[in-house]
Structure formats: C-alpha cells, structure tokens
Image 1: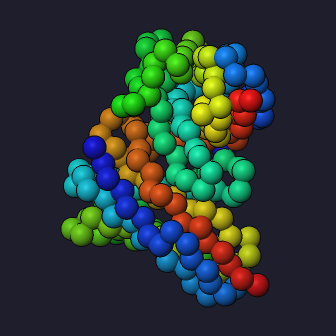
Image 2: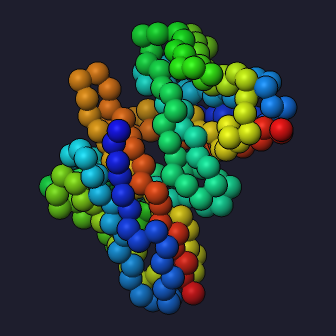
Length: 117
Length: 112
C-alpha cells in the first residue's frame, strides 16, 4: 500500500517560535499533497494544497505568511508554523495524492500534535 | 464549493448489528466518494470508495451505495465488531483539482 510519514509526531514549543512539520510519501511520488488541521472531535479542515515545484494554494481564511508550505521534491512537503501562538495548537495532518490509471487517492500521514505554550 | 452533510454525528449499535451512515453532497458534477475511518489519535484510513459510474460497491462487511439523482451516498457496516468503533468521515470532491471536502464525522460505538 501507499505509505505516508509525518515528522515529528508531537511537538511542544514556546509562543513566538516556529515549527516545521515534514510530510513524506515513502513508496510513491506525489506532485500534490494536502495539509489539514483537525481540532478535537471535529472534522478535517483543508488548509492548503501543496504542489511540487510551484506555490501552494491556500484555502480561504488561512494565512499564507503564517503557514509556510514548501514542496521541494516529489516525496516531501513541509509546513512551517511561524511565530506560533497557543491558538495554533492543533492536530496537523498531511496527505499525499497517489495518482493512478483510474483513480486518485489521498493517503494520510499519522499527524503531528502541536502544542504551543 | 462542495457542501457535504453527514449524519448521524454519533451512533451506538450492539455488536453484530448493522450500522448505516449517510452523507449528502451539493455538486452534481462530483464523481468520487471516499469513506475514511479514524481511530482516536490516528490517521484517517481509506476503507472504501465509490465512483459515480456504479451504484453500489462492497468489500466484505463494508458496502457503499450511491444515489446520484438524490445526491447522497451511504456507508453500511454489517455484523459490526468492537474494532469497528471509530470516527467515520465521508468526503466528496470540492471543486478544486483533486481536493475533497469532508463531512463532520460519525462517531460509531459498537457495544460488546
């Protein structure tokens, strides 16, 4: 099957610092990856679409300068939460899109629990 | 954009009974409907999906039905087991290339 890793799994940081989260597709190439945010007991909210070799596309209400996305290779996308504040504490999940002959399927990473003190 | 509604938000069933979760969508052009299972603190896992050229798809105890006219699709789990307890999300394409919109999720509890 398709495997997507995410690192780190948990991070605790002080307010005002920046945190980088990595998303890797381990056994397939992904020109498109997605970043989601999930609050407790809620659904996945798409933050942005990460495109290899081009700028990310952000959803309405998501600050581009706050959540920096870089998709430098076909297997790696990174999300950097800049100047993190307690309200940024959340579960961040990436997914990588595996394209096929008849179907395109999103495979999710295990998520990163961010706690900003 | 796509609007996906999912219900119920919580569902409790006795072990061995069936569970049904329903979703509706708004964009008649949508043609791909995946279902994900998410256990507490873990990643969503694709469990089944259906494309608009079929009305039903089955995989062992799990089945999905699609009614394009009514714009709704449902997940059916038969002979439920305690390990089926999780949150289930439906999704539908949301206008942008390959993006999907998720439903709010259904917390399924299977009581032994």
